[in-house]
Image (cartoon, rainbow over all chains, first blue to last red; front, top):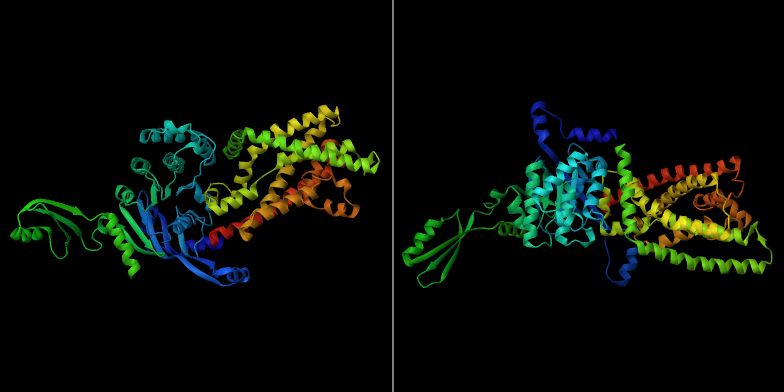
Length: 337
Length: 270
């Protein structure tokens, strides 16, 4: 125990105490050089190989997260992105305390999550993909009441929270429905509501909109944004849906193969590979001419002028590059290097 | 105060969940009838072939009452921690349990408590009443019933800890079925739930009496039926004492093993 508190202190030796303390107050998550390694048995092929595996001590080490440092401030909604298998879920599991980092320090709400998992759980909420923390056979309201008691939420806060939910989404139709009878969308919605119920400082949402229809996605985004605004809840969101990112996140962090490759504003992201825009012009013969313009090399007006010298332009469309395209470029770029 | 409320809230939810499976209770009762019919004919044959009305100090009726009540206790104590935990580990669901603001063992115990309450009232009490009516008072009613309930609660704790000592093994072996069968067989045999301990060979019985399994079925039943001197305080207290010691020992052992096993999840990711 003693050793643990020492370790925590090493990371934050204050040089200018007042300054440090001030910024510390807002930082709800601090990760410093965190890595996570898994030992995996090298499996051999075929029947003979399977027998070999019975006695094999041949382990290889897989680095799921590699030297990631980041800080998250109170009230942020962060898009935590990366291709499949990049280490997103591993990072989130470390932040929640169900995984212990191999090296590096993590602090969440001032606690070391894996050492103080139970206490840490009091102040976080979690929605993991298609897993549910609700009581399958009971109506949703019973799960809410149970969570209220388990998290020891005062009655007044609980009522206020339900009021807030009512103002954000139409919960009446699902409140008395057993969870097992719900559609995937309703269940996800319920799980998100359940994660926010005890008003935690941080909520982790791991692919919450996976498999949902467009209207449910919109509803869920609205809900997350509403709760974040009213309760100042910090939200860490992993998703593959750039619609979620565009709708919710100001800041995004991208990891790939365990390494952090981007951590900045979403606006900045669009200029990451140069600012690309797509210019479409309809010419006198009715055909559309499409050009991708890199604004570092030339600008839109120049291209239009050049085209006008040769053709008569009847119509113009200008498209910003989508987040999705930029992200794809980043994923593919990091694979190539 | 509020600490207690979070526990009773879990019990309450367990009761409500169990009540969803009305048909399950009926099936359990039906299964018991078949099992008890088998037990009846088996022991009838044993007693008939002996020719004596009393074997090892127990009459045919004593044996039947003992085994019927043992079955009722079995239904009451039955937990599926081994199945549930291995499924939770394989599906990754266990993360959601680990992220509750309560210690996992405590959370698990109280999550199951509701189903125990239900099976006590829906299977144990009815069986008890039927036995009483059929045997016309073979079960003595009095203070022994109070001691029986105390003993039964300790049996519940011991049984929970046995399950919690076995369940995490599936983290290491990745097989559940075999482990569960082994555990089930050992507990049912050595606790006296399938064969009364009086029928065990003397030397074997001596060994079994030093094991925790006896505290799950044999001791509560002895207390309820006022056997083996449990009708006097001098006979009763050692029995309850044995149970209490096993409660403490197994709780400590269960805690240690679980803390070790959970490391496997947090370090290796399950």
